Amino acid sequence: MRKDASSMSMDFPNCRQLTHCNMNSVVWKLVLLALILFALKTVILHPFPGFWWIQQKGIHWTAASTTPAFQSSVRKDKFLEVPQIAWGLNNQKIAFARACLTARLLNRTLLMPSLSASLFYKEVELLEAVAFDKIFQFERFNTMCNGFIRLGRYSDLLNQAKPFELQKGSGRKWTKEKDLHQLEQCKEDSVDKFELIQIVGKNPFLWHDHWPVTDYAKIFECMSFVEEIEEEAVKVISKIREVGAKARSESFAHDHTSGSLIQSVPYIAVHMRVEKDWMIHCKKLEQRLNINQICSNKTEITERVAKISVLQKPIVVYLAVADSLLEDNSILSGWHQGLLPFEKKKLGVWDIYKKYPYLVQSAIDYEVCLRADVFIGNSYSTFSSLIVLERTLKLIKIGVARSCGRDARLPSYAYNIVGKDGGPQSWMTDFSASNLQSISYGTNNVSCESKVLQSKWK
Ligand SMILES: *[C@@H]1O[C@H](CO)[C@@H](O)[C@H](O)[C@H]1NC(C)=O
Ligand SMILES: *[C@@H]1O[C@H](CO)[C@@H](O)[C@H](O)[C@H]1NC(C)=O
Ligand SMILES: *[C@@H]1O[C@H](CO)[C@@H](O)[C@H](O)[C@H]1NC(C)=O
Image 1 (tube, rainbow, N blue to C red):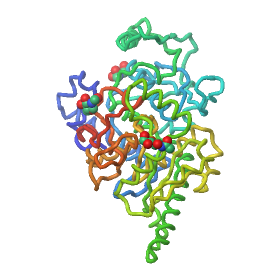
Image 2: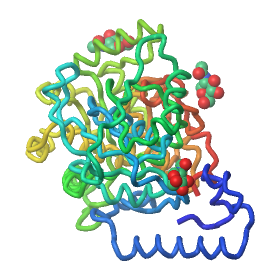
Image 3: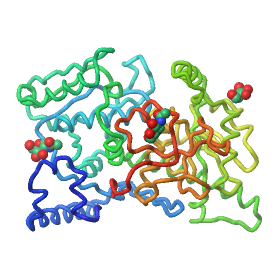
Image 4: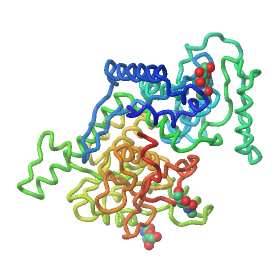
């Protein structure tokens, strides 16, 4: 909950247009109070499914720690439909958020889009459409994003009249300005009168971006995996901590971690991208961008990770790797003493993963990395970038805007960039960026400062 009503209005663009906002009248305060009480009631009477936490050096991971109180409303009788969303889990999250922000611009409810359960880049018919609410909690999304973004179901459509079909432009000549102009035109009566605007063409990940990182972050905050996925992630994390506890008790005879203490045994997660496909992709990217900070081989990664000295060893290093590497035992070798590398198979949790399609497997790994005591990824990976974004958000909320130095809390690092001490560069998301470019396509400009005022999120 936001603490103070007067600071609330700053975040709400619509409020600025309403002269009432500034009148500061008693009536307005009463309305606000009623709204807050209503929101509280919703939270108390309907605890979100999957509400759980793991204590982590004083940081609580809660599925619903805050309910942003956006004050305006999104129209419930006008809808936007977008093409099927595809590619990696986090490309899909970004594409979904971009579709949401487009719907918001048009003040329309976004019809729940289809995601893709499998990872085929070209053959659209192999993408296995899966409904948004099979992966993310639908009701919780609307509760959390209430007044900012609204998701609807196809059954909400009243009439089956022909939709307005909007073809997004493409090619070099289709600039960001043209794209925005086209969207603005859809707000005019001749288009706005349609109940449904149907955008056809490219996956929203490829649309032009018109929004600051903070807008995306607000949407990511409203997205929680369904309970089943969260439960599977908890099982994997428990297994990691169990293995860590065992190693500790073997190293220190007096240290018998048991029961609830196991839940506080720390672990490191490394999102390690060294599979062939990635190596080909990253080498090309390095050539095109004329830098050599994108690809890191296994030796470089293990050497850099060994230089992180924040945690007591022995400690488990969970390797979030592509399936193709699960057969390759060499990724488990070469780690320095005290760093105990495990992937899904060695950990004995492959059975949990293999029941699911690509998208869910990736979601479980995402949660395991998100909740790790230390996370190390590649700053050119969308997967790594969104994990760091969410970890940074957590830190900002507890008042930490810098994670530099040895006593950093919930530290994240980019292994592809060498930091001052020869280790991986310490990494926090730059929340001041005016678009998502650096997060969706990657950057070598990472630092341990989030460059945002905490008050923005209070
Ligand atoms: C959307 O439309 C509703 C109803 O007309 C209005 O109250 C609200 O302020 C609008 N929201 C935005 C973001 O323009
Ligand atoms: C890994 O990269 C380093 C530095 O670029 C290089 O010296 C080394 O030979 C590479 N190792 C392998 C196994 O490719
Ligand atoms: C790196 O990021 C900072 C702050 O976000 C920015 O001021 C600076 O221009 C960036 N540097 C490069 C080379 O992009």
